[in-house]
Structures are given as structure tokens and as C-alpha cells.
Image 1 (cartoon, chains in turn yellow, purple):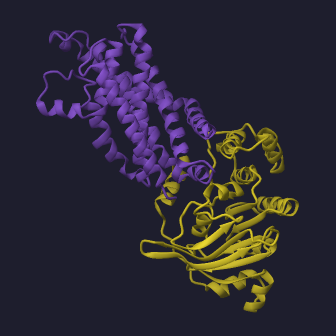
Image 2 (cartoon, one colour; image 1 turned 30 degrees about the vertical axis):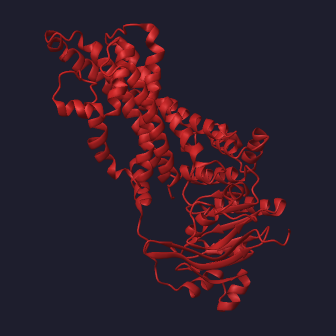
Length: 264
Length: 250
């Protein structure tokens, strides 16, 4: 068992009507590894996460999360991972504690109260547990989401741009929690980020995806060596090019923008 | 048993409702206006036409209207959850989509029934007097049946929509006709054939009729038929809503 990979993808492909978002990718993440999945906007990162986390069915290919198939064994997969989505997924009208409670009941967590207390302490939100999430800052929401993702003691934690839009202090904080977890509980961490220097610092292994294809994978050191660059950011740019990627805003993004305007 | 998932989703809807006091109060303005403006405005004409007290006739219709609007909105509210992420949190949980949909719908229906009960009390303040207080539980049951039907319908519609752009169309071409052609505002007897036909295929007409029977003692279709139609459509719309909800892709 210990050598069995935590996440495995083999020839994974996802096609939408007229384009291929994820094109025949294969990779493997070992247990306890911190795995960075990097790529420009629209490269296929989020689509891959959605497939691994049972939200989308792949067009073809195989994958295993914690030994289970996200296609045929959804509930076992769902119990075995925690996730922090790219955009906030908390209920603003509930308190921090209630958000945790909601999650705990859905996942049938035993000894729930103690577990919530412990995790809220871990992310340093215990004194705010009865406050409504709508009064939280971006960083506090992220910390709460991490605590929530860990509530059911998952073996794998998916983080889709967990530090986007946060100040360096909060980012550091978040990574120190994650490192600690990774060390003490051996949780596998699968994350995406646009802050390449972050990946350089924390990731054991990196895969770079562009236009739906994995263009390189290896340790940060190997990638730098392969591209003869000094930093992972330069390695990233040399692998994916310097052209800016245009991503059209979908319905969700437009709504979020309007929502933000109305809030002001 | 999987009751926990249903329960926690129900509880969430209820908590959100009880906490949005401005929403509760705001949504009572319209029924109040209908009761006062129409109830007192058309009262004399109605009386002269030999139909009796218009407020007595109107109050069950306005209660049904409140339940209809609140239910459709709480179903459609799913779009909001879908775009602001919370739905994802529930969809990656080890609970079936059926449980999630049922919990959400029961929550929305409970909220709508509560709104209906509040409007019932408002109509009493406005001068409405129910014929028989012993029939009140039956009235609340009819409200719940109306609420389930339209929350499930709202959920079904929301499962097909990505944003609120089609919302105006749903209001104008579905919700408003459902309300205005339900007999909430006027008696269904002696109307042009086409209106009678439309009313007889309008689910809300049976809800209004059942409520009117419970509160005033008068019925057009008969309470038995009202209950059968409402109960049957509840089951049907729950199935359709659950199916479409299970097909949502994020």
C-alpha cells in the first residue's frame, strides 16, 4: 500500500463541444507528496481537478484517487479528499461554525464538535467561530475553507489557487498550515497556483500543463535544469511561452463581477 | 439512513430565511397591497354583482400568490448557489444528488409555507375572517402542497439556467400567468371557455381552490380533486426537478 500512488491519471481527456480542455494527460502523485499543477489561464487545470473530484466525467482515460475511480466509485472518492475551490464556496449567511457543521453532517463526521473546535483553532479562527462568514476577509474565508476541507480527515487535499488575491502574510500562513499537515498527517496536497515562486518553495513535484497537454513534469530542480533556467518561473515561461492567454468570461464570472459591483 | 443530509440542507434554507428579516418584511408588501387595494377597491362592485364579500374571496388567492412567488424564488435561488460556489461544496460531498435536491426543496417549501401563514395573519388584520377555524390545518396542508410543487418547479428551471438572464421571461410568461389565470382574483364560474380551460390546466388553480375551500368553505373543483391534483403534481415535479438537478454540470 505505501507505494501505491495517491492520485493517478492515465491518458485523461476531456472534450467540450468544440475544444479539448484536457488532452491525453498522464501523471501520478505519491502519497504524502505536495504536487503543484501549473499552467497559464485556460490550460486545463480546473477541468482536471473537476474530473478528479467527481464533478465532471472524463471523455476518455482513467484515473484513481486514493485507489478509487472518480467515475464508478464516487462516494469512496468523495470521502477521501478535501477541496478548496478556486472561488469561495462558503455560505455567507451562516457562521463559521455552521459552515463547518454543515460539512460535518454531510460527511457524517464522528466526534464532530471536538473536530470543529480543533480545526478552527488550527487555522486561528476559533475566536470568530460564531461570526457570519459575510463579515470575513478573503484570507479568513480561505482559512475557513481549508479547515472545512480537512474536517473529514481526507487523505488528499485539492487546492485550486488557494492563495489567489491574498497578501504575502496570509499566503505564508496558509502554506505553513499545509506544510505542517503534510508532515504530521501525511496528507497528499494537490494544488494549482499562478504564484510560481510559491510552487518552487513548497512543491515536491511539479507538472506543467498548457493547452490541455502536460508539457513537462519533475521536481522543481529537474525542471530548472531541463530548461537551463535559474528560477521555476523562468522555467515555466520557457516551457509555456510568453504569449498572454485570453480566457472568455463565462456566465458565472459575469455574475460574480456584477455581484461585486452591487456589494459596493 | 441518509436523513442527515436532507435535514441539514433543510435547516440551511430555514436559517437563511429566518436571518433575512428585510427579505421577509419586503416580500409582505405586495400581498398587503393586493389585499387593501383590490380587496377594498373591488369590494363594492363584487358585492353589487351579488358575489358577497370580496376580501373573503380574495384572501385565499393572495395567500396562494405569496406561496407561489416565494416557492419559485427559493427554487430559482439555486442559480445563486451554483454561481457562488456553495453548490459545489454540496456536490462533492458523499451524499446523493437526490438527497440534496429533496433537502433543499423541503427547506424552500417550508419557508414558503411560513410566508403563506404570515400573509394569512396579515389578511386577518386587513379584515378577513376564516369561516371555520377547525379547517386551518387543512389550509396549511394545501399551502405546503402548493409550496412543494413550485419549489420543485423553480429548482427544475434553475437547473437548466446558467444565470438570471432568463428570469424576466420566466416571471412574465410563467409565474404571472399562473397567478392571474388561477382564479385567485376572480371566480372561475361563468367565464369565457378559453379562460376556463386554461384555469383547469393551471396547477395553482387547484391550490387556490383548495385554500378557498379550507378558509371560506367555497370550492369550484371540489376539495377531493384539488388534493389529488396537487399531490400528483408534487410527485411529478419532484421527480422532474430531481432528474434535472442530477444532470447539473459545474
